[in-house]
Amino acid sequence: MASQPYTPKPLTDIFTSDTDIDRRKCHRTVPMKVLALGLGRTGTASLRTALKDLGFTDCYHMMSASVENPPDCLMWQDALSAKFDNEGEFGREQWDQLLGHCQAVCDWPAVAFARELIEAYPEAKVILTTREVNSWHASTMKTVDWRANDPELRFVAQFDWGSGMYYPMLRKFWDVFFKSDFRRYGKQVYHDYYAEVRSMVPADNLLEYRMGQGWEPLCEFLEVPAPKNKKFPHINDTDGFVDRCRTRNRAQMYNVLFRGFIVGSSLLAAALSACATLSRFRARLAGLAA
Image (cartoon, rainbow, N blue to C red):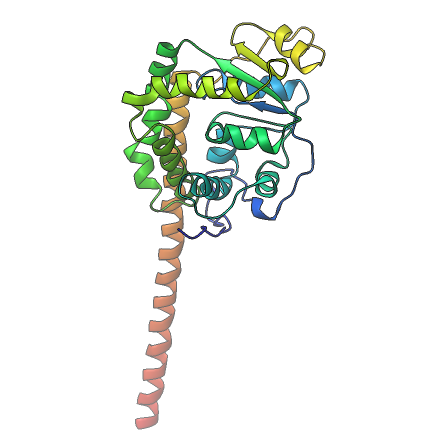
């Protein structure tokens, strides 16, 4: 499948505040220092905020592609095609284009490329956020698995600029990473994935971290001072995830409707103008014939 080209954000997308940066034209501007390779729903959104609080800016997360800069999804699609379909190449140069503005990366879809990221950035420290597998599976079923199968998102993606790039990438990632059946294979993939990452990273360069441990183990591992009088962030719970996704769907549908209104109004104005011109032309001909 040919690489999907970048297209600018429509001027009529006034209900969302997405940027439209073409990462294929970017390059690395800051060093990659942290690969947080724990699976999503293990506290990765909270970890992202924590890492940014510690000065690791920016920290890449699925939200970077889903709600911040949707064209990123085009490069994630390129990466997925290269790895799982043997189509094209995706190496250090491409990672620097996609993640070059970031000192850290976490969450999915990055976890699908744990080996590739470790090889691309061997100097980076690796963090594995963990969670009891049954709790993780139940949470993911209610959030990301629901999102990957959200009929409303699938419908909006047929017309909207942002979701038109995001949904195909999410669906592709979910299918290849969880063998097209998260409910059935999710827990086994969880165990296999964590075992694989542990086997790739030297113990002195790996921190296994569980939410609730606070700043101390994280800061000690990263060799940075802990923030004073600041609680460790806790965000992106299940209810909040679903509410944000539904709000996002609505905003994108409003973009589609507004674009339709503008286009429809323009066509109507053009039609009325043409009718008026034709009427004047006929009147002139009638006057000449009289």
